[in-house]
Amino acid sequence: MKPHDERLDEAGEDHPGVLPRESDLEALAATRRGLKLAAPGLLLVMLGVMPIAGGALGAPLWALRVLGWTLLAVGLALSSVTPDGPLPRGLREACVLIFGLGALRTVLGRIDGLPDLAALERSLVWVLDGSLLALPWILWRFCQHRGLTGRAITWLWCALALLGVFLLNLATGSPWALWLCPAIGAVLAVNAWQTARDVWLDAVYKNARVQHLARDASLR
Image 1 (cartoon, rainbow, N blue to C red):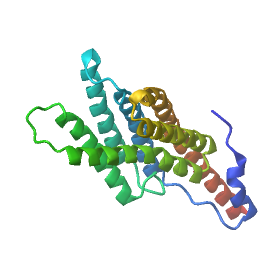
Image 2 (cartoon, rainbow, N blue to C red; image 1 turned 90 degrees about the vertical axis):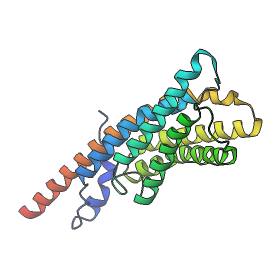
Image 3 (cartoon, helix red, strand yellow; image 1 turned 45 degrees about the vertical axis):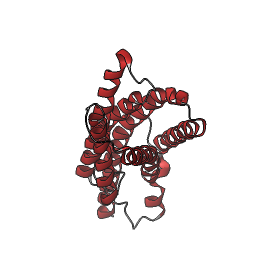
Image 4 (spheres, rainbow, N blue to C red; image 1 turned 180 degrees about the vertical axis):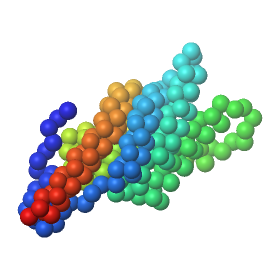
């Protein structure tokens, strides 16, 4: 485990009369569980967007997309809201609904005989892509706010990489850029797993420090 960055505690030392805020460990435990569940969801969604329409891999990729969107929706639903989670309450519910609709859309796409809802389909795709692009940016800010600099930088690079793939795909009209998605998905999954771990360990460390400072102050 990497040593704790002592710079995170400078505010409490500069102002001895003001103790840092204790983290809500119960809320952060929920966020840890949610991010651990969202981690494979991110990977599966990224694998599912590979430009393979049919053939032997068509059905497995379809199943990966359904499972990926479902895990993302459930993972965010389990996570706590800000400040102990990455999303404020209204935005969290919106993302859960959007990713849940992504799973439903993927399932309905395999059913023949349904009404043609091309305009609604295109709108939903834009909303899904926008939400998926926004998530790494949100997690970047979440980690940055909690002082997890390494995790924040990785989320930032992932967000830029996803944005680059999206813009290339939009500008060229060719799906070749989507072949980069599995590699990005693997980094997203690992970073989500590590963020879940680091958020918890950092909160435990800070709470222990708050209790230590409070005990020292009471003994003076």
